Length: 450
Ligand code: ADP
Image 1 (cartoon, rainbow, N blue to C red):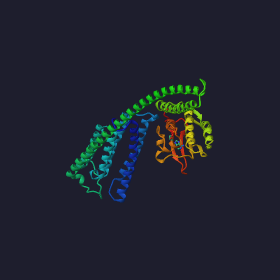
Image 2: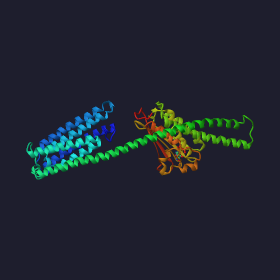
Image 3: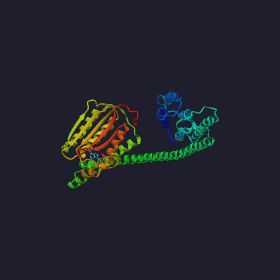
Image 4: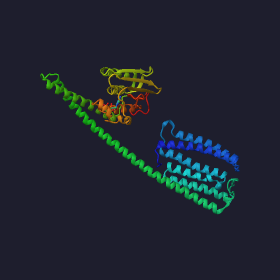
């Protein structure tokens, strides 16, 4: 079935048709009630209510049919779900023709409800099937009108609404049939044309997306190889500089000591950058997580321990408030701990002397909610989401901390999202400092991107 939608969307649309039918059934009952009781139009009300009742049973059966086709979470083939949808639309055309028969036939303006079915068919079915549905619609309506005209079946006039001899007026009957048929085919033609364009755009978009992903992988592989190589050379340079700095190969004068120290600092900075880039690229490329159950509480305590020394240097107060129930979660403990440590270190870096860092951990049933707030420099409002992009650093952060890679938060985002969680930043309502919030599923989520 070459429709605009994929299989899963087709299943959703099959359910959508069932939902629409509930509305149509309610409308039928309401219109019958209003027409006969309020407007005083004569109608075979019991037949119409009976039809509405039978439609309720029919719709429940259809619901079960769609449900059965996806039993046990299996995805039905496009052909199978296509057949169900085609059956639903064709059956609806029969039902609509039947309802029209009991409510004035050609004199009932609801005859243009056939148009809705044509639009639905054009969106959900192939072009050929849509035209076949239009033909079925034209056939059923013409049959009804002609049988009533010839007196072969009874005509139920809408006495009190329209000229109730219109169904016998040959010119009116032929004219209406002509306009009706042209309308149905035109609607199918226009809707299928629009759908075809959309389908083409969707294909182009998917192809472009796939190409971008392939290019991104290629770029990541290149960066991975490059950073890996550079890291090896840097490690060698660093250990050589270290040996010279330790004066193992001979004493240094003050000037030499200063230069060697500077070289060591620079290589360390470069090493930190390369290590962060390597870690992020590896994570993006392989995305593999060694998931297991672990104690998040212990992870948080280890991260808090790691930041203590840095906090002490800047006389920062570190407070924490961890729900007793925050403990066992499913994920990769090393990465989660690294992420929390990153956030705590950022809080320490971007908070001036004497400030506060507060860590809150709450158990929200299925999720754990972590909030790391500080009384630091805050984040410019327009950059609250940009800071999660690779290499992005806000200007106010550059002023207080020259050394930064702009990679820590991208890494944190990758880790959290691969665990099926979310991370975002907010500025504190007090106007001082910011808060990083992250959620992590506790159990083994089905949508983990491992
Ligand atoms: P880095 O800190 O090395 O620059 P990150 O990716 O960890 O890289 O952070 C990106 C940017 O986010 C920082 O440069 C800074 O602008 C902003 N940022 C992160 N944490 C904080 C914080 N606690 N307070 C204010 N700004 C922050």
